[in-house]
Length: 270
Image (cartoon, rainbow, N blue to C red; front, side):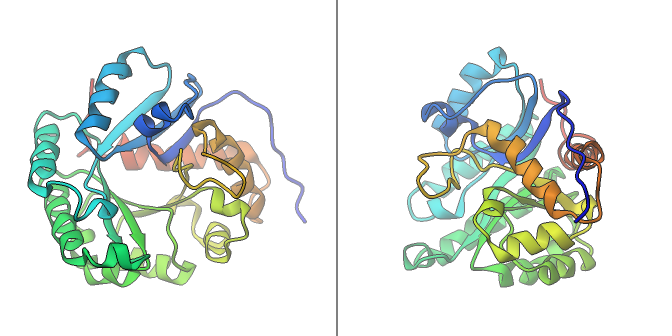
């Protein structure tokens, strides 16, 4: 086994996906100048909390807003879609999401048509405004391939907590999608597909996330945003092609920047 050089240096860890407002409400957020992340917001109330608190943050947070597939059947689709477009028009977003499909249970599948309606609204807006799309997809990877021709027209896509195989991930990339795949604490619970993706996918397509305060492990009550550091270390250990932790972190930093910040279509928000 290769010796791993993990230095205890001070630098930012980039969380590709978490939920700032929910973390704040659950007291699972630690504000730190060494933390950067993309937070998804899924309701007007969550966005209002962000607007009230963002100016006092030490953390660097990039906002995204989306109609989550699990909310299908429970929200006013048009009202939320109108609010999303208003934020885009005001240049307050750097991404749309989470958008996608969730067929994990019968409770979600019963709203399949509404999920697709919400997906198409967000896909069209991401295409029109040329912003990245954060995708949530559970038990529905076939939908990603069904829409691959439209997805590849986007400037970039984050497949958050991707649950497919490395072969599926590479197939999406080979279809011309500028995609990134992020993984979190599933690295700790022996999820075979997640571990294989982290081991085998090209480093330029990888990111780490917490999905805080969600995706907590057995015996835990929530995930904290500062657990991104532990995710980085777990991911690095899996990469047999790397021996320097700083290089790994710099590459993920570059990936994060290319996805959310440096893309010429992205907004620089105040």
